[in-house]
Length: 358
Image (cartoon, rainbow, N blue to C red):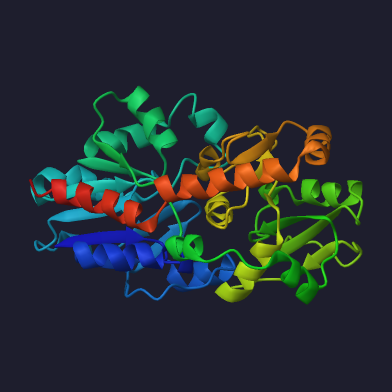
């Protein structure tokens, strides 16, 4: 039997757990489900979970480890998080418990990434050394750690979203008809689809692009809500739809768009955009522009565009042809099909779990 620990199960992760459970049954424990869903403007997934008592002090989490001492649990999938005090306890007691432990890294910290890609955390390295295997979200992350720890037993899950295959299989909608339906007239449409819950998303750059572009030439579709969301009502070429979870409406809005634009904090939103065949436009990772680990999926000139500055962004967008957008979009969809399907993510996790029993 397997036990997996998570803080919560949002809607974009439910299919991973549901499909993995079909191949390798497990008990899923969550210690922060209700509160985190509300605070992060997330929609809860439909996945059965067991609530786990936990106490938090600042970044540190102390959850009840006794649930995992059950002798029926042969494999534990815990989080690669040095602030999880109970995980340290389980790792140190592992020789006595006779359990295998997989540590699941939920992405190198967005705020520490620039530093940690040069010098990985020593505390995390110690945790990994105590575990039997490690899951990373992306191949780029895994490669960084394997340079630090040659011979590391690890797998890159290739983090993706629920329903990604369904998104890819949908037929391309009639763009002209949808533009008429939603009264969107600009010649080229950029879409933004992410929560406004982090200043690191650099909404200031999004607004600057709105201010610098001709409304007849460029229009913007906004999907998302959150406490840092600006009032876009003063921009005549911005069409704000708020939080959208209806897949049909999302399909239509992405169908209207030509490019996906998110200046910073690019994460799983890039996967969704590429699944719709939209090139991802963003800014180069730096101390000023933070990016999630999924940023490594965006390849400049292949499935997206990565800008060094707003001046470059404006210049490149003006020079971009419809043919080039089509080429980038085709590569974006192809990249998802070859690397980021939910089937592949589940299979990567399953094979790792299966190897623990050998």
